[in-house]
Structure formats: structure tokens, C-alpha cells
Length: 131
Image (cartoon, rainbow, N blue to C red; front, side, top):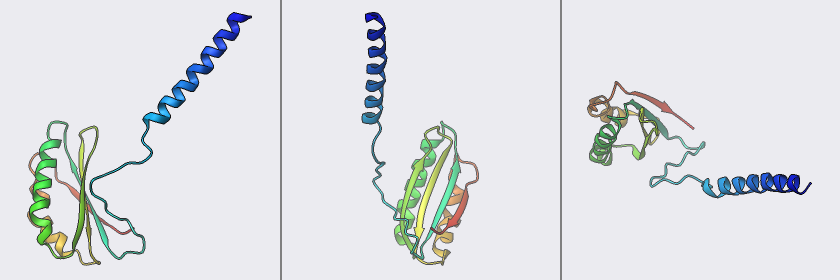
């Protein structure tokens, strides 16, 4: 009888400790250095560009994309903000950019010079979205 109680107590204690461990280890929110507000009332256009990569080429694509954005975005009319994400499995780099109004001519000027010119990546795909 005592042996049964000890086993049940051990199981319950193990479950409680696992739940507490998971609850403490999981962050309550994700944080990023760059914030791009997604306002459904905004007339801004969000552009998502997906670059297919491999685990070997992801860091190179990420680096080249960051340089291209830093060099070009500040001088392009209509540009508001951007962020670059990398897939944990190494298969993609995703560039998010936000553009004022419905005129994407600024993004198109950037895309003509930079989007298709990232070495180490397959042809990227861009999507214009509104929240």
C-alpha cells in the first residue's frame, strides 16, 4: 500500500515539475528589434518577399538582403519600414516591407535592382498584402 502511494506521488510530482518547467521555459511573447505595425485601418501595403535557400546559403542571402535594404530603402519614396526573418530550418529568408499608400512604384524600383539579384537564392516571390 505504501509502495503504491509512493509511485502515485512520484508520478504526480513528475507531472507538476514538467508542467512548471515548460511554463517557465516558454516565453510569454516574441520580441523583435524591428516593429512593423499591422493596422487593419491603414492604407499601407505590406510586401512579403520569400527567398528559398538552403542551410548553407541562408546566412549569405540574409547578409546580402540586409545590405541591399540598408543601402536602398532609406532613399526610396513611400518606404516606411522593413524586417527580415529567417526560417529555423534554413530553407527560407523572408523580407517584410511596408509602403505608404497603394502606390508600389517605390517597391518596384527597389525590386528591379535588388530582389532578383540575391546570389545563392532561387528566384524569390513577392506578394503585396493589405491587413
